[in-house]
Image (cartoon, rainbow over all chains, first blue to last red; front, top):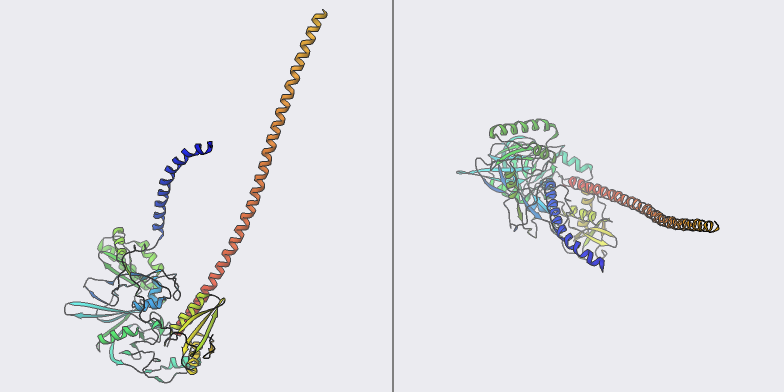
Length: 440
Length: 96
């Protein structure tokens, strides 16, 4: 009894002390979190239904186009599907979202759509392709205004890089025939997949439906039958675009349009008095020269504008290589205003070009492509198979503590066998054929 | 004379008796202190044993946590390696 009476008063006093204490702690916690985050996520707002992604008007003084956006992932999304829907390359979206699983990202994750581009330092005429950014810009003057259309591209491999330099569009071909180059024929022969000397238009033609032949012999700007390769170094030196993007570019581009192929990993642009730096991975041999040029330009900007550049932010941006414009001026207010431009985009539900997985049917042929203990490994494998070109439908079926990757359905044994062979050659997957009626 | 002797003797006996009583009280006090110290020693011993047991338990827990962390790290590294391998195969498959 005494204890209760004795403690009653201190408890009351304690409550008075604890409440403000917790309040102070909370404030301190918020401040701590703010200081750690690299880019503060925008506050939840009403998401926009769409966002401009390809075509922009530009003023003479404009250095950049577009605006960054974020989107909340849904179950089953992959970064290549999100990238294609928003006309981004896989390279761009994965650089902007380090640590996010490309094939099996967590549903609910809010990811960055890097739809804000600094224009390369090149004449604003015709086609300009910046290999470092893996992005094509098509400039067109309409009387007094200038428009730019921009698309992500796939470019040459390290062994067979896309050549830098100037060219022009020599001819345009709808439904081109692919004449297999000797080097590709040899590589395919070596892996037991001999190719014919020419591949007619159709789903097996890697040029896709449209091609712009350049004045530089053997180099084309074309479509693809492997849309998930956009944003990769995967060609023999040609420039690849998504099928929907090459169709647009094909229609817009007249013969004789100049084509300027450059490699600018460090892009600087001034927008509303704020200087931005966009960094892409440089070609190793040119890294030192490119850095020298960058620092000379930045010092020149400091001198001209009499503003102090945040060199710490420059170093950080160079180290992170995220491919997104980052403000580098030491004007805190302006920097915060830059982040306000981020727009949240509503998930469209169905992503453009995402793989179709037909319903299971006991009448069809299937391939048991793999069996995994780990559900994520199985989901990744199924996603990779589904994103082949031409597409191979694949899904995961759980069986006790295992997860089976099943490719199919296929209408007949021949198609199933051909697909199993493709899986072996392209992905080194040893699939097992499942006959109709036996796939339970 | 005899009377004086009697008085003196009585006084001496009385004084001695008083002195004897004081010694017994002191003894009781010492014993009480001993009991109290012993009780405190028991408590300290128990606390020490508890602390040792807790330390042992904490060390075991820490070892278990470290082992679990190591296993988780190994699993994560293996998963990352598998993901990288799958990604490399995918990129290769995207060539013409």
